[in-house]
Picture 1 (spheres, rainbow, N blue to C red):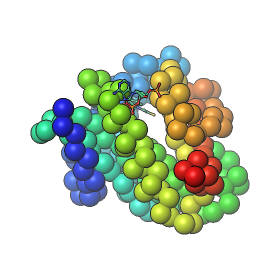
Picture 2: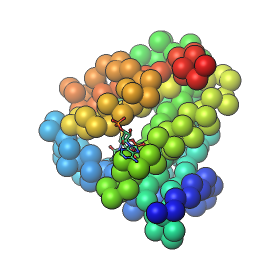
Picture 3: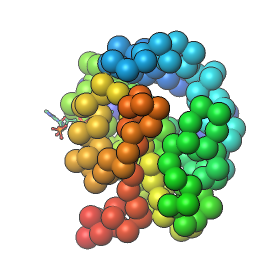
Picture 4: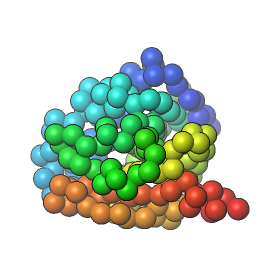
Length: 184
Ligand SMILES: CC(C)(COP(=O)(O)OP(=O)(O)OC[C@H]1O[C@@H](n2cnc3c(N)ncnc32)[C@H](O)[C@@H]1OP(=O)(O)O)[C@@H](O)C(=O)NCCC(=O)NCCS
């Protein structure tokens, strides 16, 4: 296998459509709390609005030759983006700055997992987030039943903060200082 990592402009986000839709199906298959919530979640209802609301977007697609293996999507958004009619994702007053970073969507096709691709994409995303000096708080939202992802992020330095929507989503959090000190 010969993996290449391509940072794509938001104009080409359509290239993520199938992967994003697969991610939603995967999360539904894992969920034991309200899996039906995923029925209305897809590329058009999740990724397109996120990209539009964000101040900065970062999308990386991984390919094995000409085959798509996975993607990661991260963004920097005003913290108010995370308090809406769907949920309040975190206590806005716990974030001192105006904007937060989020590793928002992450999916490697099953046959390509455990080759280290996820770790490369995670590191690329954190490096990208770090360039925003005014962003001190990073979030990842994991849907219920996805223990593998939860453990993966914990090993990468994120901590469980709290659950929202009666346990439908677990909020993971890290701060700029935590990630920087780990790199030393
Ligand atoms: C979570 C996810 C992105 C991780 O990606 P990945 O490419 O499998 O991640 P990595 O290969 O870097 O690391 C996974 C594990 O494989 C191990 N690994 C890495 N290279 C390996 C190799 N060559 N041989 C064996 N194991 C290896 C890593 O040590 C790691 O082990 P650990 O989890 O015990 O630390 C991926 O599993 C995925 O897409 N899952 C489905 C969708 C999902 O859950 N998305 C997250 C939504 S919040």
